Length: 313
Image 1 (cartoon, rainbow, N blue to C red):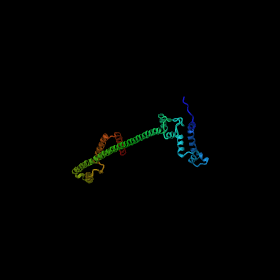
Image 2: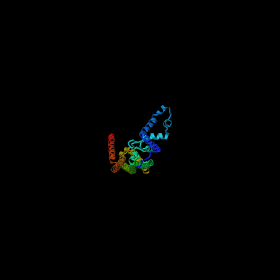
Image 3: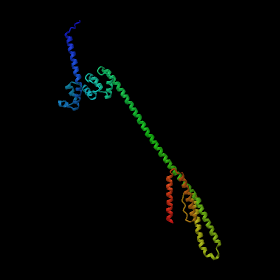
Image 4: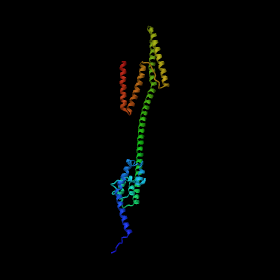
């Protein structure tokens, strides 16, 4: 049986090792509490009660800790989820600080894949970097999808605007065609007026011939009425000349409205003009796209005509 000689150096080594393990265990047990205490001291600014104007001076003078280390501990308290990393003390400050750079979901994913106690800091950093890169790529893809969605939405809005403009243009075109048809009907009616006036002139011409016949039949016995007949003849001649002038003006300017006296010939001219216009109106109503509207307005016109006729009778 081999006997191990316990030299003074070996004895010292064993005692030092036990001391390190004990102190490390104590440090691990109180690591989380220290992190929380540093965070509370900073947030509440209680270091001012100890005579320090800022947190950094307090850490360096009271705790013997550099600013970067203090903020690493505070970051651990703020961002590391204890449910993902138990026990905290056995993982190490550097690893915990590394986990603090991840979101809660990323921490959970890392701890499910990696044994934090037995994994080196370099291996853990590589896994965290890989996870961050994947997350960054996912965010980039999400941003691209959002951009595509926004562009699609904009395209749809532009398409709806184009459809609205097209419908508005079609409605405007429809109204323009209706106005053009109405204008053509008015032109046709005006073009027919010279012929109607010519009919009235022909009627007055017949009256002139009748006067001549009456003149030839006058006897000496009825001569006393010649003066009256002459005046009547003169009136008819004036009417004929007036109608002939109006006929000439109407031929030169079809759009002008010709005013004639209210006798039978003129009435017939007006009657034929009104009848022609009304027939054109009925034809337009029959072809009109908005038939109900046109029929309603035509019936209203007939009611107005009956009212006006009732007023003069």
